[in-house]
Image (tube, rainbow, N blue to C red; front, side, top):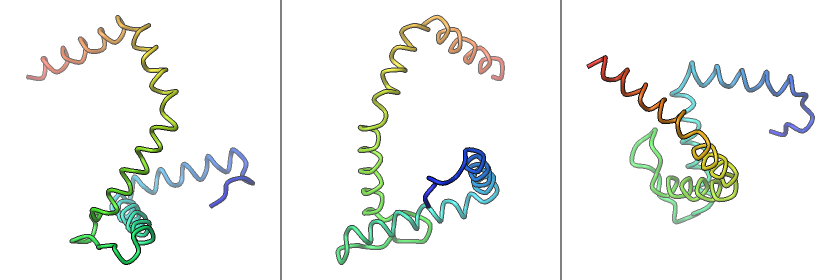
Length: 111
């Protein structure tokens, strides 16, 4: 699906539609994601492909393909985020410490 010709308003409308759809039908979304990775595994492994043991779970090959994809994605896309978070943690130590203290205080009151 190409988004080159869509305006920002149209893109946002589509995003809102899919966010609502995934919230109301998480089982359908999970089935779609499993089907997508199984199809990629079938195409990649060809005759060596082995399907999953049961419906609704990924085969070992599809899971491996997904792990590789996201590993490569993190290597190329998250370097800026990692640097940003390192800098943020360095500059906001007291703020983060206060958040942690507040969190554990709230947890302690529930016990």
